[in-house]
Amino acid sequence: MAEYNITWDLDSIFEGGSDSQQLRDYIKQTERHLSELETLLRSFTPPRNTDQTKDLSAILENVQLVIKRLGEFGAYVSCLNAQDVHDVKAGALQSKRSELGARLDNQLTQLDQTLVQVDDDVWKSLMNQVQFKEVSFILNERRQLAKDKLEVKRESLINDLSVDGYHAWGQMYDSLVAKLSITMDGETLSVGQASNKLDSSNRRVRKEAFQKLQNTWAGEADLFSETLNHLSGFRLQTYKHRNWENILKEPLDYNRMSEQTLNAMWDTITDYKKHYIPYMKKKAQKLGLNQLSFYDVEAPLGDTENTMSFQEGAEFIIKQFRQFSPKMADFAEMAFEKSWIEAEDRPGKQPGGFCTSFPDSGETRIFMTYSGSPSSVATLAHELGHAYHQHVMTDLPVLNQGYAMNVAETASTFAEMIVADAAVKHAANEAEKMSLLEDKVQRSVAFFMNIHARFLFESRFYEEREEGVVSAERLNELMIEAQKEAYVETLDEYDPTFWASKLHFHITDVPFYNFPYTFGYLFSMGIYAKALEVGADFENQYIALLQDTGRMSVEELAEKHLGVDLKKTDFWEHALKLCLADLNEFMELSE
Image (cartoon, rainbow, N blue to C red; front, side, top):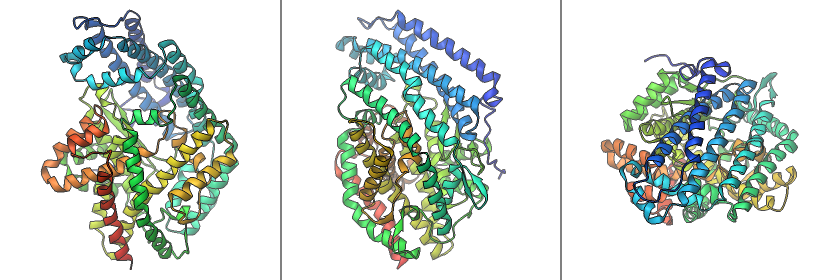
């Protein structure tokens, strides 16, 4: 098997990084296409009958072209920013991407508002025509959402102001994080590198990393509270002008998910949390502690650090993917061979991990910092799941490739689950098996407790933010209150500055960047159970499910491919019982 690079190759997209002349030419050409779209829309009027479709067809073709090109440009810039937080030119390119994105949003707003004016009977007939039928779900969705927004001029003003307002606050957060560093054992680390120390099997290292990170985030808390308050304030003012009273409207619409489904999921999880309390006590005992602290929850049991090199991790993932889906394994192998993955542990990188797609070139890139731990292997598998999801969507119309975060997390979590299960089955001895099994249980705790804490915090923060600016001290209090509730008060020390350290609270793409993870985790449980049941026939069924993620609500997706009703607790209870099987096996082994 070929030796895989631990750093990615971006030159196959654009040569020259942030100085790329090829990229500058691409941006200019994209601007020309955007100008053409603006010209088309200036003369576009609502079709009065089904014969007036030529203009709409041309507009949709241009819209998809611009979306594809801006996606390509934006993905490249995000990779430049991630690989080197000190790349000033990449920051300037990000501003350019925001500017062009706002222009496209304005044109889409105008298009949507024009579509609203089409007579309902004419609209239904149009959506049954061949050229529109394939993207009819998206067009119907956009038309419906437009009815909940302001008129074109006011929505366009919001889009324009967001470039140096809303999105600028998110970019300011990134700039502030880029300047942070932590010194441990005489070594200067980025916050991402220091955060990796929280996975250490040595409690002294975990505790020191946690305390130094706490001091670092607390030292800049006033600045981070500014970014969070102004970002959320912009969002709330926008909602106010649109007469949106439910803070969850935008994230639920974005995730194509009903509030009834969300409530059924969280209510069921809350009922099942009691089963995890003995586990939290048992883990504390195994670590020689009276009670876990926040930085102990994800600590490995036993010395499992650096158990796999990047090469070994890659080979293991490919092998396990092949048991379920040869096509997914082939894709993963190609991603490694073509150096689509940035995993090197070095200073100057952003913390965390992501997968981003390049819709024009049909490629993807994965970003993470690989440490060799089981958790790191799982993260790599997770991001490859995202990449495969996009891969099977590549030949669909661009409008149908816009799947939401909750179903995106389904594909990634499914891939992670395959590898985690395989690791347990291939354990060399009982001690290793218990350690790897605990790593799986730990992920359940993350989705049911850590993610729930984020949801509770964000819900309460927005309630208070509606009344005015929330101080850094109050943000700390809200975070601790949320963590105590979510972790059922099983910890003796919490993470008050988590609101500052977690990038997700400062992302402007969509609020409540939390519950989709838990949804994806449990939804993937249902898919995984079906995969085990179906066997060899599963691969094509799985691809069909993924390809529908951009053109259905999650309720429709679950009904069509799994035959379940997500608005009822039955599905969630079944998924949670699958999680409890791992928990019970761990508890038995640990006695």
